[in-house]
Image 1 (cartoon, one colour):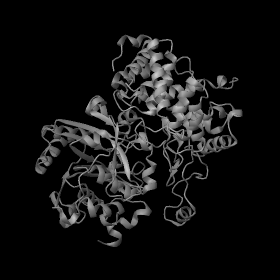
Image 2: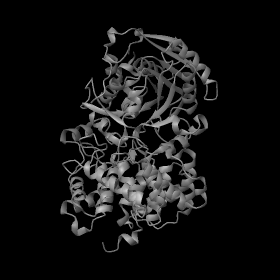
Image 3: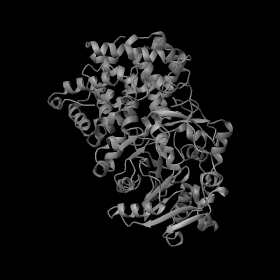
Length: 322
Length: 309
């Protein structure tokens, strides 16, 4: 990947350069890999499509978007889910992202709604009666402090709820007005929001989903915190949201990894914070290692620099009639 | 189509394994000389080969007590190159933190290896291939594993010598959890916990089969490892051509009985040697270097001091 060094003077050329990188990195099958020329992957394709939408005035971008959309539709599984890579036959956490990206294009199309239904009916694994009993009497009782009865979403089938896949599912659900959600989806959304709040680390922010292990507070991470905050954008008055937003703002001077800088910027903008300083930080990080060639990071950085804020608009705009 | 792995050899049919223990008082000494000299003793067939160093980059580590220290990593890279390796790639797929650059910055990795790209590969986002599991010790039948790992001629497991709050210890076999890609299994790779940690360790190591191990025991971690324990200075680097024997030796140094560590006991049946008589000790002797590690109450039964061994 090469970027025009003059782009440093103005963030728009840098943004455009990132979008060009995405267009040039698209595979011949229409999808994007995690790295240029890598196997086409649902997550990378979904974020690339979301990022390229701000570039749709460009004819190359329009063609790229159409081919990417076709890749997503072609690789949806019969049950409505998406696998991580096209060659796989089981759907998982990336379904929320694929449906989110397609929804930005097509609105509530058949593919989006089948993906949405799969998500709404996809449950995490919880310990059965005997496993719970064994946990209660075993030496490892009380290892973690969290309410495991609150269900969110797992990364893969037959595993536990975790913060990030739960946040992705909620972000997808929040795209739909209440009247379009089934009772089940409404109930799951409420429980999942409670689960996220329960899993917040002491002091604010989230890690993957264990806020306390062996009595020691878990260290919050930027990634899960950002996605949880974006998932809880409609509940901005919750104390957990306020506390975690404060944690993220205080963390800003220490954030150095490219994906963390990009998504932190996207999140803080969605909460109406001024993040101008992060623009140049993102560009500096890019110049060091070109985001390690990671297509998801390129796409998320492009989204962070997208002044239209279409994907994650500030809360005031989320409240507008849909 | 699934990739194939070499057939398993029962421990009784294997020749003795070799493990070398070297003193290394700090990360500032000439680690390259120590590793180069020791690797020559093993006479590994690395000339013209691709080597993958599977390091242990768990999380943010400003104090150098959680991750394989970059001084050890860069010394290993230079040592393998000096032995004629065609390429040496540093790789890991952290289980919790998706931002690999954040981990790298916290441990000043760029100061040691230069730009991360192309020296370092994030295994969480590598291309994958399905691999049928031979041991079927856990409930898993196959795993999608990174193409870079499967395509390497020589895989070297490079863990930190630490306790682990789920597995008892984390050494070269447990370190191989990091080859399981987060893209397919998430952050954390929770499917491995549901399938059974000890049994999954066996399945992963039977599929990938690390050829060599280099353990960073210069500063380890005791107590609530792998990330929230206490730094434990031991001043050692442990190397060997059998990861099971290396881990068993490390456990003995840590004051723990390897046969009481569930995954190690299982690995000793099929993947390498656990028993001291089948391990040819090079360099320093275990008996003179034992530095008992503090373990959580849940793992007190592993201690050699408690039950005698």
